[in-house]
Length: 167
View 1 (cartoon, rainbow, N blue to C red):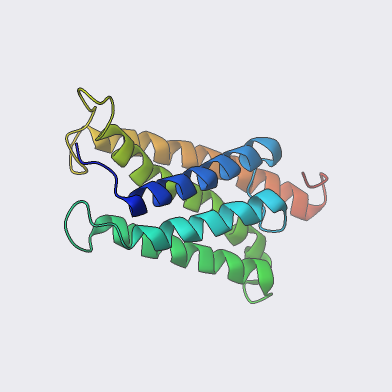
View 2 (view 1 turned 120 degrees about the vertical axis):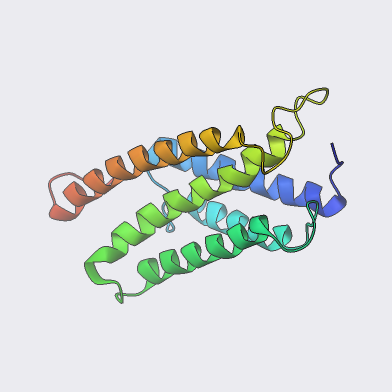
């Protein structure tokens, strides 16, 4: 097990803020909204998590975790495009809602990987980021994202059609 660097500790703390704010707003509102306090906190912490992650090279040079950070920033750029411009038209609210939920899912990949390659201290659950036992865990997280996204899609469709009040 390798110890966290100072940057790693800051990165981890910021990512926990992102995960907590994302989880709270998902549980309270059924989605992460870029126009409320928790949603803005989630987005800012996610951006900072990605940026601080670019300086961490515990597993060698620039690699998959860094690419995941770039991809997450691209997802957030699409979200902001959907939230702030009419460019995406009727797809905008879907891009915003599902994009933010997808970015939340993306947080969990390195979160689970880094946590369980370090814990429990005496016998971590996974030997490293390439451990085959990690794949089913990520698969289950993705399945949870898909179920949540389907529910969000349906709810958002009803809201946009005017059949229910927005949450």
